Length: 347
Figure 1 (cartoon, rainbow, N blue to C red):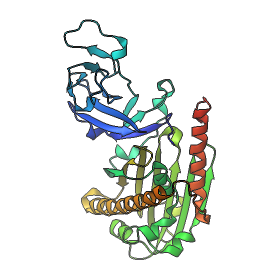
Figure 2 (figure 1 turned 120 degrees about the vertical axis):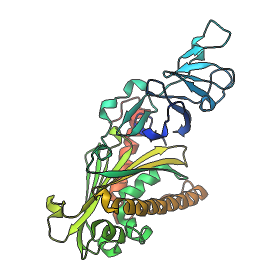
Figure 3 (figure 1 turned 60 degrees about the vertical axis):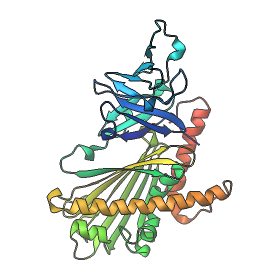
């Protein structure tokens, strides 16, 4: 299942170097990204109209992309602008282009109906531009279906088991957390409070905690403004106001998960880890390394799941009590797909 009328992160802005091409597959369609001389990002189907040569193997010169096979040239809108030794250029020589937007150091792409692409709705990632935050980007190619990644983020009860060595903490504290799931038809929000918790290793390293903490996790998923799960988390010394919004005495982190399908069973998993811990303290670098290990653990888990699913693709999952946010996220995505199939604009 794919949802086409949605914004996906295609790459980090730094991945698209001037004069270079980047070939990737999104929603099982081959796409080439490149930056023109004017600094604009372009996204075209990665197939020359002449003999199907991948345009990602071509050359960027000025504002055009030249196929490396016979020199046919295309602009950033996919219009064929030149065929060597031929004055007439047929309209059929043009290739499809995809709407793209560069925002907050991210390249967003729209794979669906171009007329429905509204850049103004794309979710903000303010931490990427705020000097109070330090952040680091990562791209993981994951051999699993994209919805499994969303499931994993929307159900954080896996944290003490899969991430016991990093951000885990006590399993009983996770399962007994004060948990609230909100769903308004467009957005799923998961709110978790874990008061008087023993802080995991990463929290001790980041916050310098000497005792127990009041810990929180907030996950927000609103695919109509971008296929991403935004996770806000952190901890403060017990009783210092974490749940009333007074969090300056502890530390906060934002983990932005950008999920982009590659094929039905492989995904582009781009994410950023952001923290308010002072950069000069050395804490952010330590935290980033630990979260790299954390997401690597997720990657291994997701790929193991996909292997077993591939053995029996039609075998259903058995639900458990902690599936509330996962079920609502799946329901939301299913509604969006049904709206597309019915010829309506997805909510």
